[in-house]
Length: 101
Length: 278
Image (tube, chains in turn green, orange):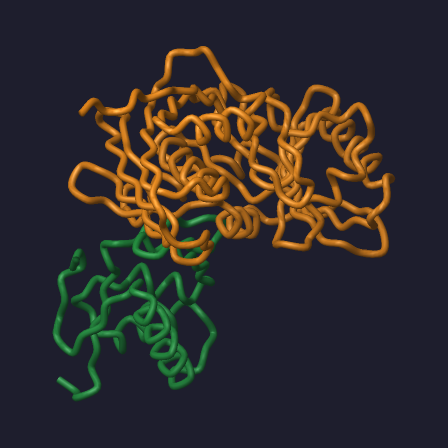
């Protein structure tokens, strides 16, 4: 397994609803509210805790959207870092439970 | 030593009567004056008992609303409240500051409404031709201006905090005593909601469509909601999506003179003739 392999899971402390191609996400801890575009939504929905981010980018982002793979990976890592800083996504170097507290 | 007798007033906002009790006669007078027009003889659904203390000054930025076992714990520098949704009863420790009182009541209503599919919205609202119109936006967007520009036949529900509950054919807006810059309580009445406008000031009056996702995004940013609770957050997000599906939500760019109300009336006429919305 590569050293930089990361796993992401959706926090259980959020509410999310898809609407017109966008994902609405609200953090129940502080009521912060986010809307995700189509690419971010694809990553968010694939965040099962078991699939490495690299594979999500390859299979969900590069397959569905016309993006450069390296740029897509960099953008995905930035997006994951931002959502994890708000408690929306959980990030680990090991597989995670998708319903982690 | 005998405990002082509790005196009670029932304040009914949004059709939800809440008994407010205190043993302080002056505070009771404050309650009666502040919520004059919303005093009710209905049987209270909920009860709050006030215990007056010396606490910190009113503060808007550090409120916490969280579960403590079966109870809600509502805290800010100037008040400390507990409320048990199972019994409908709660207690508040605060000073006699009316702004603290308003805050506690608003938070309690936001909790009750969230369970019932309603919400409080940072918005002015008014009844025009039997239908309610909501005008929301950030501070300075024009909520109070819209109410000041309203013609004489418009009934003001609030210039600051709109009260919304689901109804058989959409949503209903209720008047509230929670005033903003206008410093005037709304009328204690209700009407079905015809439209929600997000305000922006500009050189002309115009109404523009918003995508449903944009409408939900703006709506969520203006709902008063404080609770750190997974279940209520899910419920609130579902309510916001339902509201956008059932009520026309538009952007209203307006030049601040009385003609903006002609534009609102024109929108209402056109929409009633062609009742389709995104």
